[in-house]
Amino acid sequence: MNKVVSGADEAVSDIYDGAVIMLGGFGLCGIPENCIAALVEKGVRNLTCISNNAGVDDFGIGLMLQRKQVKKMISSYVGENAEFERQLLSGELEVELIPQGTLATRCMASGYGMPAIYTPAGVGTEVAEGKEVRNFNGKDYLLEYAFDSDFAIVKAWKGDTHGNLIFKDTARNFNPLMAMAGKITIAEVEELVDAGELDPNQI
Image 1 (cartoon, rainbow, N blue to C red):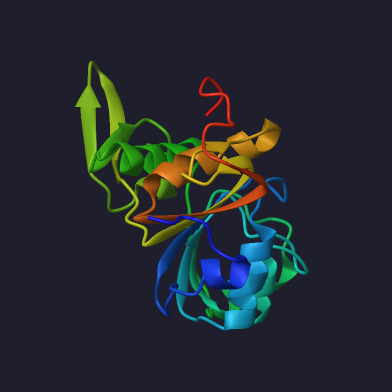
Image 2: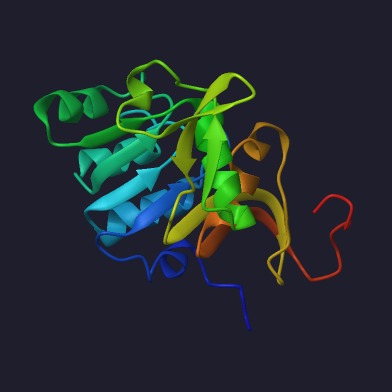
C-alpha cells in the first residue's frame, strides 16, 4: 500500500461533511497547518474538531471557524480566538471544554482500544454533570469515554514512506496520541525519507 500522497489537498480529499477529526498540536506549535489550509479550501462543513485549542483568528483552526466549517469544538483551552468566542456566545458553535489531561487520556484510550477511562479530574465540577462517578479506594472518579474519531491529522518532524513518524519537542504533546487514535491518520511531515532511514529507537 502506497502511503505517500502528492500534498495536503490529496491528503484531506476523503474528509467529508460531518466528520469527527482530531487535530494535533499544542497552541500553534506542531499543528498541521497545511492540511488545515487544505480543509479550508475544500470547504468541508459540520465538522467536530478535537484539539487542545482552537487556534487564533487568522491561523490554524481559527481559519476553519471563520468559514463556519466547525459544528462542535472539543478542547481544553480556547482563550485566544475572538471568532470562537463570538460563535460560542451566539449559539452557533457547540463546545465541550474538558481538562487537558482528560483530553490526552481519552485520545490515548482510543489508540489503545480502550472504551473508557476513570479520572479524578473534574469531580465535583460542571465537568461531572451527567457523568457516572465511581469510588475507588475512597476516592471519586469520573467515567470518560474514549474518542471516536474518523480522522486524525497530525504534524511530525520526520516520516518515512511506511508511515513511521518522529515527533519533535512540543509537537510530541498531542500528536503521537492522536496519531494512534484516528481510524485514518494523516501525517503532515517536515521531512519525508525512505523506509529504513529513521532510527527505530526514535520512532
